[in-house]
Image 1 (tube, helix red, strand yellow):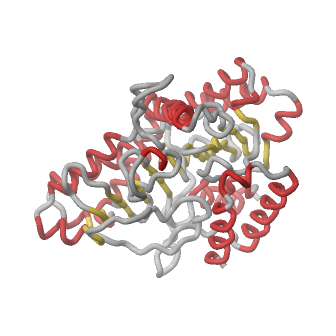
Image 2 (cartoon, one colour):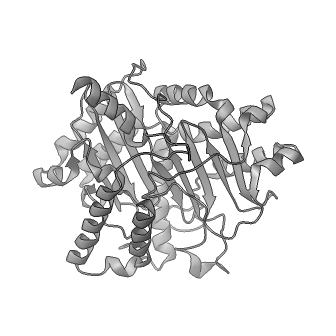
Image 3 (tube, helix red, strand yellow):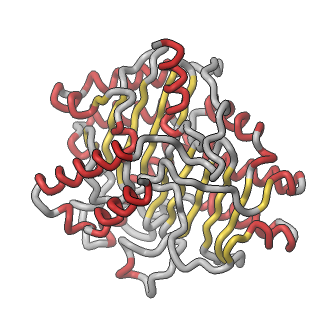
Length: 391
């Protein structure tokens, strides 16, 4: 079933930008096809070949208030028109959560930044500001701005690439004790943010850009994902030769390697690479620091909670690598434990392929994905427990 869904999704993607120019009814038909495929492939969660590992997540107090997030969501919804609100709000268990997609031509739901007035945009960024850390908000804004840079590099094609082509949806009603959440969906930026009481799950998270460094244009000097790139490379290079051999699952990188992107909610993925239990104390610390770069896109209190969860499973965490390890290498790495999956990938050129030679992966195109394996992406396991307990 999953293979069939992925095949259909691939067929949709290959239509590319041309599809975006076809009549709206054709696009709506594609949306209906995705609805049908998701219905045939209900959410399970990313898991190993032995199946879902149960008992990893539970409803409990974190001691970190989510009131600022709820208040910001209510302010955002309040400044929308009735028509905007109607297309932006969904039930908390709606499959709308799962319909995110990185590609710029995808049909999206919700209200777009491009149709918001200044007050509405400020309220939208207010919701993101209340939910994310300063680093997380800056990364999000930089990704949006770099999307305009991509438009500039494509002959000022701002109809396809600009900083406002991002959409927000709200699932459920913002509440102090009932489940709800929000999603940002757009090119190279997807944030899924589930809230239950004072608990937060912020996955799937997709971040990246092409280019990742703006060398010209309105946002010249903007750069993202350099620490994630450099610290990943520093980690593999710091390992002894025999441990590098264990961690490196492929020495050559010819294409794109991320596995956990759109419509991959249920993939079967076993551990690969080297276990953290085999690493030296220094390498384990480097690994935790690398994980922290992704986790600390969350606001501080909830990032501490998440890192404690990660550290509890550190011995079971695996680090895998594809590609070379020289100073200018392009590569892929994966950090995988029962409670977190992180993928970083240098991708082939797409939007700037007319500016580079060849089609091999480049450092100017990065995709990174963060997932919560074993059934808790989108807070699904917490939601299941909530329904079992309260309903």
